[in-house]
Image (cartoon, rainbow, N blue to C red; front, side, top):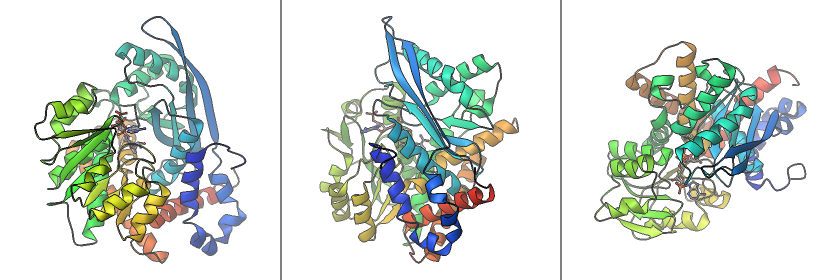
Length: 437
Ligand code: NDP
């Protein structure tokens, strides 16, 4: 708190991991002796830079860029870039800290990092977004590389932004270094299934949790928050598995669609037209728009079994959790990073709701990014079916790792504890092996 004043989200993320670690430290005094806890919450490097660019009216705009290279004990730093006006250093640090353990949980050779900017892509022209991305990469390029640090997308950064960033990297370095960024387009080094991976992965993880209670998605009603990359592909996969998503949202409000969200229409509105979500309601008979409301409010009138918070941090609080528990929710999986407040998480765990924390449930995205790096390194590209099968296998592995670790540490069914401990052990052992660095 003293060293990192005001970084509330970072404190929250560290607190949530550390509260799971008492039992680990009792068993492993060597981590205490080597100050692993102190070291793991100090980033190896953090870069803050000015991003000047010129808007369509010829005015100079200034944004702030960040890249926090948190931990490279397991591999090159890996984690997305977020472009959103709310981004502060503490936001990037919370995301980077989570990323260390998430990446460790995948079992793949990737360290943890995160970056972004307070730039708001909303309402900007393509040309403005391009000029911003080029300026951002003009500084970032000297800090990243296939063996150093491999950024990807996050909120506000999709294929369009990754394209402009990659173009500028290639131009400045004169290297077609495909493995420097992930989330690329299919024709220029991207992986099939990367776009779908986080959402699909979160649903696979939830499916495994449901199986422990002898259940499946078939016939279940579901709420998903957000309508971005993670939300859209979560909805698509829930429907493919026989469930029905009756609500989705964006920062302007929520839609209630008792017949089940029409994914094609939602994709068209959000991905193609980049419009607000009320446009969906305008074109969808039977759907209603709840301006300014969180999607969880739909649980007041519609019983749901599964909730997938997939928008942003702290978007599901204790009042929302009570509502969902009363509406009969049996499973909650975090498609977003830290969307559930600590008080809400505690309520779900006390009520015996299956609760998949983000670092486990949404790890399919970064895992598929690591598969993209493998394809780039071998100058190969795999088919969609093969990549989806690898993703499904990875999510099953993460589920098993969390469940077995929770059992081993005396808390069966506690995926929060299982994910935190399993991720931490892998990183801590590598840090010990590499000496005091
Ligand atoms: P997108 O930018 O594609 O979509 C974000 C969605 O969340 C939009 O619907 C957006 O609404 C909504 N949202 C964002 N900020 C807020 C806010 N402050 N209040 C209310 N709604 C908000 O991002 P992604 O889908 O990629 O990311 C969503 C979450 O998933 C994030 O927490 C991200 O870190 C996490 N994640 C993403 C991965 C990926 O592969 N993309 C991987 C792992 C985790 P609006 O359009 O109105 O802004």
